Length: 616
Ligand SMILES: [Zn+2]
Image 1: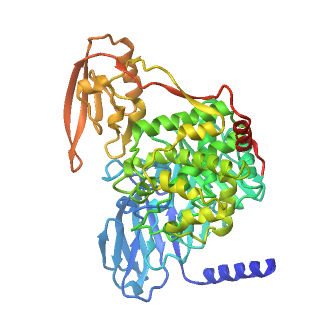
Image 2: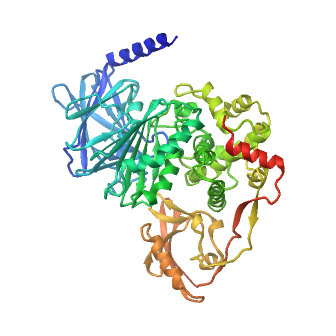
Image 3: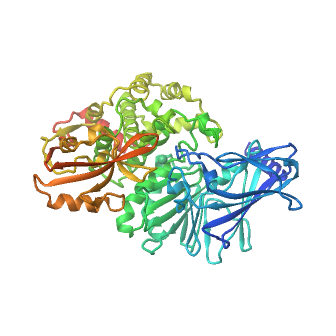
């Protein structure tokens, strides 16, 4: 059986390589006005017209980016170098006439990190590109390379001519021995799913179970090295391997990490891929970065389970131009986030106190910043437009749904079965090439776990509006919520946890009415107001914390506070308004913490033990 499968595998891949392919060329030595030239040698087309497209969106980002807007000076050429006619039919598409004569496409691309002149939504750095001649080329190639519609499954080859001292870190294998790196992939989706980072080499590689792990780090001021990062994440990966049952669903995996000394858009993070993840984090030494690195890496690495290996058809057959969103973000992001923390607790990389404080914080942010009455499945399906401001709740309420589901399953199974086992069982049904139907997942989970009661869990808390019963869930493992008296607090009228960043204006925005304090109401603040200045000091993202602290430090009751805000008036327009009021303190929300119950029952303690320590 094994031999037979291997033979089939070889046969299919040799067939694929035997066909025409698309070859892309990039010369990193030729950076002109912050742009790189892309050359595409095309296969032979039989049809009259063909459309070359760059993605509007890529998997894992849950946002429309229109990567076509970074393309300039597009040319379609026949084999004699003669220009062919083409028409730009949309922000991301070029329709080329005389397709049967097409031999090559050429154009220039700007990077996304550093092109403020290009209009449109800000591209989250882990999904974008940066071209810096002497130091770094961060290449998420979906922001540079396109595909021919209808020919997405054709084999592809990418050649990169690099500056001599640079190394290209990626999960892709360089197959060339010369100065030019050459990467092969089965198709476009596989190629762009493997970001590359070219920089002075700083890498570490080591085996983990059945997989080879690569860590590649770029630290502009040499504050942190790949070996320091490896030291932090090795124990974590060991724990994650055990959590997944001792084997990994991949045979290689790359952590590509860019540390930045200029986080100008106010956000950082990472994006997952099938065999790698790309990180964009604030630069610091390993002491300051360790916790962030562990937390983000744990999350991204667990994406090898979902959505990468367990996903719905919407993701399995991803449409780069007109994507349909699945309703299961609670699974892809929420359960992944929960597992990233649970694994650390279970294998003693963190303790229960720290775990509880993480989930306390998620609960607070969820309550103050996001819409409580919005069913999670509805948010998920419309996350690209109507509910894009609610996306961040996947890391808050989403993680809580994972926590609650785990405890519910454990309780129903007398501690024997939780989400960890559920995901393993689910993986047996599906895989990277076997998608589930969006509407069938809940029934399938009920069947796999043999727990009919789960149906009502999904109906109430995931598809429905019912508030999640945090107190009950905590109670099942002998924890309770302790409330303190509300107290006077000094604030500029809003709760920090209610702030978000508007990705278009790059300004701090008060996300919800709940986040406005009494003093804020006196000032006249409203939900969706964006903050510009306080007492003549800027509230731009990079000076926000410093200037807020400066004002609050010396302020006295009755001092005049002047807040300048931008209030949306519809259609992306804003009105600048100055709000003024004599300073007063506000009654803050009563702080709440999760504490162990004084006299938990044996059953509660037993469930806690099974939830924390069961080694399957
Ligand atoms: Zn994620």
